[in-house]
Length: 117
Length: 108
Image (cartoon, rainbow over all chains, first blue to last red):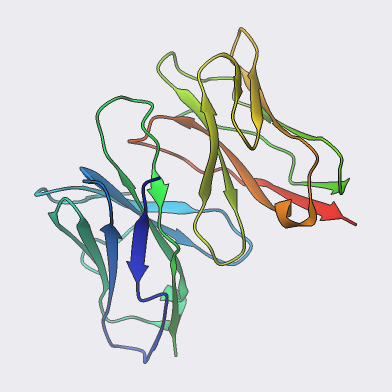
């Protein structure tokens, strides 16, 4: 089946620094990638949707200048958390879709645990 | 976007069949129903997807009535390793909205 990887799996950083998280589709071309955030004991919340070569579409309440998303190729999307603060500590999960038919599923990565000190 | 309603939690014993029902009263004509499983600190894992009637794969069955306003995920003979959160989603691969999910706890 389709595999999506994320790197790093876990990151700890100081407040005010920027952190980049990579999301890769390993064996398929992802026309669309999604970024989610999940706080402890809560459900996944969609942050943004990105199509290869286009600007990402952010959900309401998500600061596009703080969460920079780049989808430069059909197999790679990156999320950069700029000037991270403790309240940005969360579990970040990406997913990818091949596009095409409406029933195509999203394939999820293993997630990245971000801790901001 | 169709909103889904699931039980917050369920308990079961090893070897039993578990049925988790999801309500989605305002599902759209083009929406599919997809179930995901999530373990702590892991990304969701696809279980099964359907549009209507019954779908079965190697791990689960999905029952969808004719009006499509609800669906039931059936897990046969659960084991301890099936303890996880199960999410019911309606929509397409381009837009999924996660509800609160159902915490299934399988007891020995």
